[in-house]
Image 1: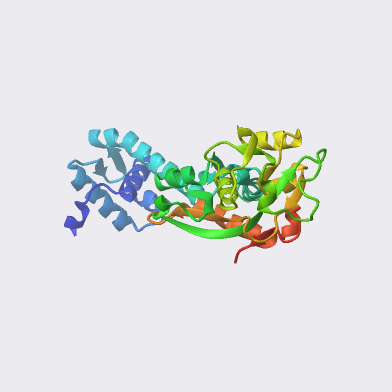
Image 2: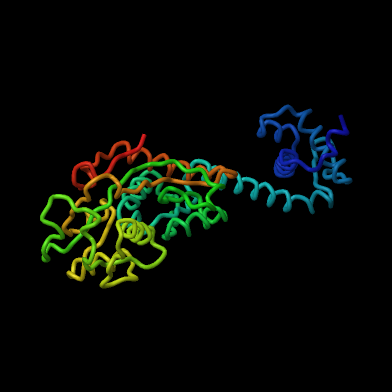
Length: 319
């Protein structure tokens, strides 16, 4: 049995020692600790063997600390206090009273979908710190793969370097043409064709935006190069340029619906994008991130397309 105690000092042994030192009585200490007195005495002996020194002078009715015991007592108290703090800290994180989530999202999603999700998550878990990294899907894939994010909302299909990621598709969103209400509509028809963008002045995002690459690609597939009056802007700047009448812009439906701009849907079903939430395959997201993902899915399940203020059939939730 003695060999079992040569594994190192154990927390419960230090707790027994500190209680005996404070009460100066083995039986009273055992009562306070709710253990049998012989078991407590055995653990104190095991601690003394491990440390190689007697900790108490034992005399009937008189228990006193030895020099070794006097030296150990403040250290034992500190260790026990640190252990209690560690337990409390871990419990707070485990119960989601504290912690953080690092979420990556594209600029268009930060301007539309993400604020509603984060508000709902914060209402449920106000102690969790939220860190948002805004960037294009390719940048977010690299950041997520490097372990600098817990989750990322990205546009699929994923780029080639995303093989280390697992992604769940959430939402299929139609792209629309946004124009200034003060300017003539971009077409007299209810819906616009990609070919109608030919020679029309357009406001374009900076390089690195998924929407820039997508819009340029579909225009080239239709046989023309898009014409830019202003390019290089972030989302807020592009909305402002369109509002000022500098040109039209291809925008996600959720962003356009909140912008106050005129919305013209595209004809057909080619002008749409799929939004997915991704995480690394080799590392399970922390619990707070898993809860954020749950809130995200619940938000989508309970939100009808009309709640986003979109034209009919421009947004479809994926199963």
